[in-house]
Amino acid sequence: MEAKVFIGNDGEADATGVTDSIPWWSFTKTALAVALLRLSERGKINLDEPVEGKPFTPTQLLRHEAGLPDYGSLPAYHADVEAGRPPWSVDDLLNAVEADRLRYEPGQGWAYSNIGYLEVTRLIERASNLPLSDALSDFVFIPADLATARLAVTPTDLAAVQMGDAIGYHPAWVYHGLVVGTAMDAARLLRHLLAGDLVSGTTMLERRSLSQFRSELHPDPAYGLGLMLRATNPLDHPIGHSGGGPGSRIAVYGQQGRTCVVWAATASNTNPEAEVFRALENGGF
Image (cartoon, rainbow, N blue to C red):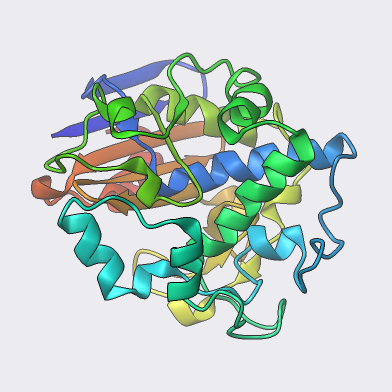
């Protein structure tokens, strides 16, 4: 089971496979980053001043440089998700990962952290004075003209969403929030972002090189503000985000005016990132 979308430089779209809504998993981080940067542009938050009562800045949160841990390393978390148990309270989660104990001095290291993006969610809600669902709608989905994108909060919100072989999943297990929508809307969001329609300038491309994670697929990796990209000449290479969760994986990337999305059920053995990079290089699937 797959969903594929390729939008060329001329704006023409080629879409195949699943047309229903799908979970965007960690591409949600890109949407969160857009919301926070748009609030910053409106003077609602300063990205480079420490978060109140915390030693890190919003920029460090967005770039995974805040020193916060990640709950992905907790075996009990994965066991309870797989068993279909109710999500833990936020307090229980933070206690389980010892979130008050920073793993390194903010800005002096890098570690992917969903806890960091939970803090981003809290900042968005405080700065906008809105619940996250409304803030994302006002600052991201409506400006990008997305008809299907929305925040999933309860299992009922996933009733019409393609989840691969995941049954009974509770979206609150994604503590920073889980956006769902069609693959086409995911492509549209990234296309608008890279075209400069949502956030001015190249702020989101301010990146940290991650040479320690080099691989054949990622020969020069870096992380910007809610974006995965190349450390050198990023505009010449794929920019976007990938993610995964129970039942499926997704990759959403753009390059030089082209945008591509691949979502695949885990059982399909498709590597969405590899498929996306190949399509962007070849000008289509």
